[in-house]
Length: 288
Length: 264
Image (cartoon, rainbow over all chains, first blue to last red):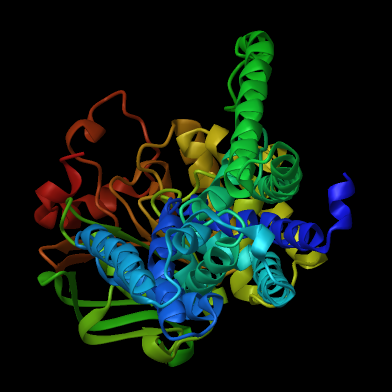
């Protein structure tokens, strides 16, 4: 672990840990809403922002945050309005985003395949100290928002109509989710890259829910899986000389596999006990 | 009736989806302490009626008042407890019964405050009321349809509302759960609560209903004493308890909307 003596490794690790916590904390709401792939789509849109930044000599992270936010809010407005045309509209937006990004990156002066790959698949090692500050501030903001508004966001994602009738500011909360999705995607593009961003939001949640019973527990465990696989991903990739983003995602998938096997085995072990319980009268006894 | 008693007031309401008008001209008033059942055939607009009252379907013409305030300016949503037909589409993610019921406290608490002792005890009280306190830590997905329905009623009760609005609460629900939530609703009504509910059949809720309203082709076709069971419900062996059956029968049979009450 003498690698940690290098400042760039410490920066990489710090960035990965923040994203490892924030991405599943947001992702759980997206999964609950059955919008697991939305992060992927917003990632496509963010690439246009990267291209715009490179072309205009602005920080690609900043322009990507802006373009992704516009894209995410646009997606939310389409989702709110449409029922049938929404799906196709999203597809157009996403492919427009990635195609626009590739063209814009190509047009910029410092265009190279390596440059594009850096955003598509992540490149934590080249992350500057300034980048880490941006990741730290935005990541913490996302994390705090997701934790503080958990009851409201849970109600919204669990049953939007009920949330509306409860007088919750449904539209504001939806926009909050859209904006935080855009922010998370953009800061995570440095770790896992735009093409694997969604994995860090979704896979830890998928792993956690194999073995949990409630939402709060799932959120906590998903964040643990996220931070664990992100941290381990950096260290393993440094030792084994593999791509950090892909390594992180594979580790999260391994956690999912482990959790799924655990859940299956546990289910098998419990089944005999439940069969015995079924001979009892069902719960028709009323407490009146 | 004074304004202070008015809970729901719909005047010449019209509403619909995507260019199709479902409610044409509806007028309905519900006063404090009433238990009103909205009946009607599938597609008659009975669910649209309560969804319009709740603001889930936009009103096209006419006006709606809630507790004496025009719907658009109404802010006291904690006074209304909504029980949808079934648990929302959401949740690939597990959620416990307690977590779902706790959502019922948000209207009262607001989104900026963390749940406190009052919220926790309200959740437990509501679950006790529907007889599901022992399932508080179980994932809702492991409950039967009827138990999920009772969870939704507990969620509405947890907010301690003045008006309960239910959308076909007994659709596809086992008898035990029907009895359980009939008892819950009876307690709520006995405590002075107002209930507006859409029903496909009266079932065990029959003794509770004070007035029924029949929606037919987007209009109110009848308003008055609940109709008697017809068709197979009237057959021997289908024994509900129906007090005051004889004196109302004469007034009912004349209008009784055949597609409303016999096509169960």
